[in-house]
Image (cartoon, rainbow, N blue to C red):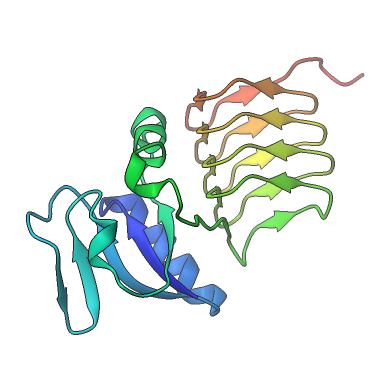
Length: 173
């Protein structure tokens, strides 16, 4: 499957490495505001922001930008209204079979997501984060590196959990 990564900051390199490890994906380009003109060089697209019309082949997208509101604004831009977004689960993550994962989300290396958890669209569960059972995570959230959500946590859309933060609704007895 051909993929264009939206965003070319540090997080995009993590996403690209995970796509390569998974093996079923081929990164054929990047879209970012740092590119002033859309062009194709050595079979790789370098697209100015929102220039999906430049690509004439079948492609899916993944927004690799950590800022929740920016990720949301990009997703809702009219150039993407008929485009496909892929979710990525690292081969080094552990995700329960009962997890529901929204489109365009990312689960990073070392992450653990346990049973009966819902993860909304375009949400990032970053490196070594743990999401325990029966959690409900909204759209466009960021669960940062090494953070822990204990069981039965509900997060509204666009919530950011800080690096190393621990959320416990009820301490186990």
